[in-house]
Image 1 (tube, helix red, strand yellow):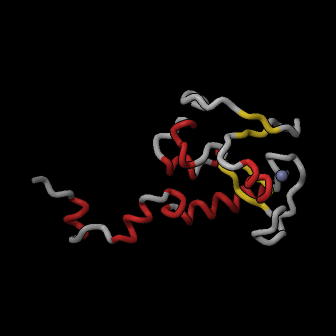
Image 2: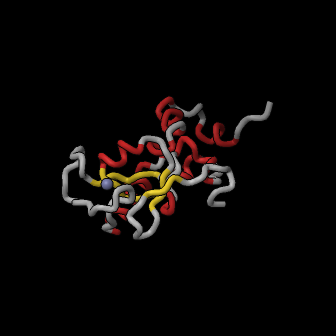
Image 3: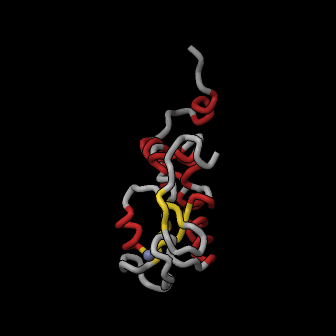
Length: 131
Ligand SMILES: [Zn+2]
């Protein structure tokens, strides 16, 4: 039996906490996600779904507060041509600013904002998209 060098180094199997985090790409990279969110916020863009401005000072939870939306949901990372959920969760090109309420209405659909047109378009979800 070949022993994993990582395990030998740590001297013990990964803790339950580490294993839980490893299964959730959003939490696993929470620091990188926070940075991504701050970067998106600093862009000051209007809502990608309805086109109206976002009041970035509204408290989280307010229906019109800022939310970071993933164009390709992390759970369907492969649709965007990503090799792993982590790549999908941390790609600047895969996030857009939305109102909380617009994002909630959108649910798990894949919608991308067409520049300045103000209309949100449904895009094809073939594996080749965005490759
Ligand atoms: Zn909106």
